[in-house]
Length: 481
RNA sequence: CGAGGCGUAGCUCAGUUUGGUAGAGUGCUUGCUUUGGGAGCAAGAUGCCGCAGGUUCAAGUCCUGUCGCCUCGACCA
Image 1: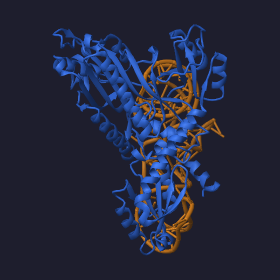
Image 2 (image 1 turned 30 degrees about the vertical axis):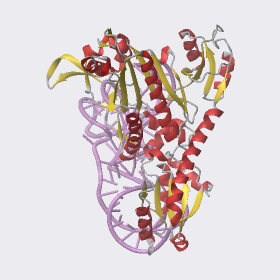
Image 3 (image 1 turned 90 degrees about the vertical axis):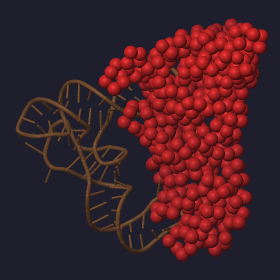
Image 4 (image 1 turned 180 degrees about the vertical axis):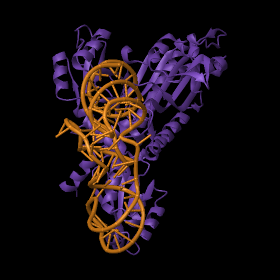
């Protein structure tokens, strides 16, 4: 049982969420050894513990990509200016934040090269070479890489200039097929978030104002963070044949006529780690969903200098290696120090093994999320650990969902919407006519942007919350990271 | 890019108002005692005071410039 004195000590290391959510976030990111700042503004060093989380996400997601028939490729880092310029809306959207390579050694380049902010143009150039017939379709490519965007304000994971992600780029014979792919991959992202990361998401479509530069439609999964703000956690775009026309990608169809293929792209970045932190974390630090936790259980020997304790702990750890990702901390830090350390790092389970336990042939398992203690006989541990991990994942999901539900409201007038937001950040469902002007007005007057038009529409009224004209869709509004 | 704040030991910061020997806590190293919620004692090592100019007998401190970081806006995955 945790008493007040212990709680207090931990609060000294990490600013409480209540007091300052931004500082809490920065503290957690640093205390949990996820990142370090680098000498380049806006670029972060992802440390082993943080990178291990990304590797776990990669492994899960890459498996899902393979299961849905995708292949990995690698495209160049540099894009010639002329190539980037081929699709007008795309270049206009990205131009303000691209970095340029102008020199090779001491010589100025005849044509400057941009460092990829995203790789649509490179994939298109390649597809133009390799797609000739309907037999060449679909092309289902993905790449894991980093991209660079010259951001003005940055925060670890949430917005850095360089960030790691995957970008899928696919080409299809028909529009229907491409739309289905767009939705399928959004579903893959939603499954990653909900089943593995324990983050409930809302699937929906972006308004024209919020959609990707050059896309016909952008789909998104939106998650609510602990403080009520939204985080766009993955996007999937349907391009129609716009890029295909701009890049002259044509194929001979089954009817022996030339046609333009239909395209999609979809991406998920290290930002998702920010979502994990801000969805599950608490005042004692990080709380990791077991599926991506680098260490799922940490064994802490108690009074490890005593005869036999360390040996027993080593044997126990070794015997559970095939059950979960488990580690023994036999450093000479005090047991209390270790408790705090692994709590800050969000390790889902702690296994305490001391002289008293050894006498009774048992150990104490403590859950990170609620500190619940289980006294488990050693020979039942292998069966019990996966079960507790599963319960913990479910509890994380339920808690996150509860937070979202508690902070989600409906409004049918602007005053109502403003009153709700005055109480604190959250999602507000409201009807919208489809006009940009109304969207802008909500931003201006209430400080919220449209997060998405959920796939599951629940009409609140039939008129726009802003102008009163007939409504086209229910929109989830909120403040975003 | 606008407004504000901050750059001093690995980290967090005091010292700057009023110029005069470079400081604390924590961490690190060594030893002993401890160990079921961030242990105690002792000894030790650690500094281009962000960088560049200037004023001065003397600059961490004053002046000018510059770079970087943080927070809040605007912009964005």
